[in-house]
Image 1 (spheres, rainbow, N blue to C red):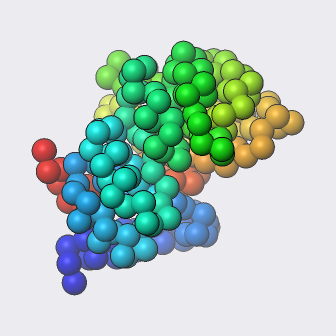
Image 2: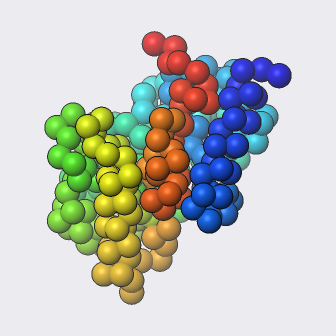
Image 3: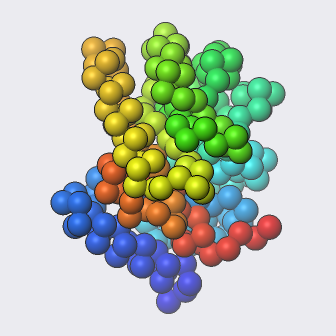
Length: 228
């Protein structure tokens, strides 16, 4: 078996074990394959294994993969910092945007979306005040969600976070999960779908699953070290 096949099998074992410990169904967890820097050939191998959701944060590299792999029914997630002048491409080449944290960007994505179905978006939260990460605080998440509910071309689906290295994973993820639940209760009558909590990566996916993650983003432990 290839390295990717072995890595994928080990990841599925970790997910299953984490779900068993938390009394959760492994089917409730979506594995987002973070394919940034990986060539089309490697992504194709991952598709052959059954993976259908891929995360990219280098736009030009991502667009090439999206176009070359159009024959597959894939969900592409943009997981990088969003530049205003790249909004048109992001709005129309991706099914999901996970790093939304600015009202201006939300408005531009909605205005520029020409696909018939809304763009699924996650609000990126930064509850540990890490200056090296994007994201909004608790109040900012509420304010941004209020705006998203007025934008017809965007579909708010939940929250995403990247914790600071100094933050205790369990504490941090439980805090974000609580915010996710609080917002669901506060806007219950307005939300069509608020079902996604994207948190946890290669090193701490177990803590994320324990806290309630529905999507984990894995690159290194699936594909190996970055190409650059």
